[in-house]
Amino acid sequence: MQIEESMLGPEPLDIREEISPEALGLDEDTGLKFLGLAFEGTAVKFDRGIRIEGTIAGKANGPCARCLEPFEREISIKFRSDFIDAEHFVSRAESEVGLDELDADVLPEGPIELVEIVREQIHLAEPEREICRPDCQGLCSRCGANLNNGDCGCTDDAIDPRWEALKKLKK
Ligand SMILES: [Zn+2]
Ligand SMILES: [Zn+2]
Image 1 (cartoon, rainbow, N blue to C red):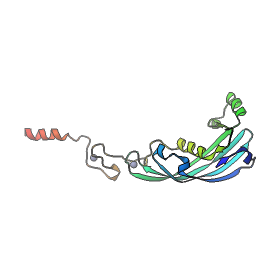
Image 2: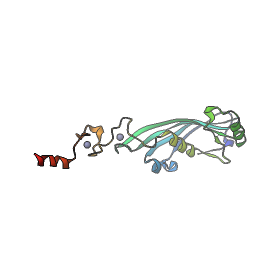
Image 3: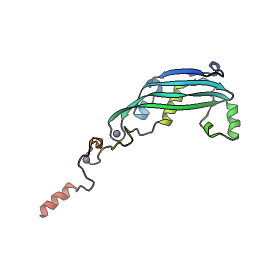
């Protein structure tokens, strides 16, 4: 969906838009698949530009960066993006900037592509290395077992098997 200034007035325009994974094009970057993504929110014209706010919701699935098991989880990203008229943007940058305005962008000449906003917000919100759960134990560095399934029996002070063989010879 494209959002143009001419579509908007001072009353917020309700938007509900499905975002296809193909249009989003994030699967390769992140190693995740985004399913059933949709943006729900509003666009409104205000004195210095356009404000788009709402929530991106859907599911992400992919392999865990630690244990490599596939997982799926809900995503919900709430955001507000301001697109400020170029002339206001300059003067505002010279004046005191409110903290909440620091993530504002310049209003583009043409229409605003909703999918680009969604892509940017997912990039900002999603950690680079996705893990299946905050306390994922990962894989054992010795035997490769998934430690979420329990202790594999390897111990940190395990002795190199070649030394073990030597010891036996000495006895
Ligand atoms: Zn994991
Ligand atoms: Zn192990």
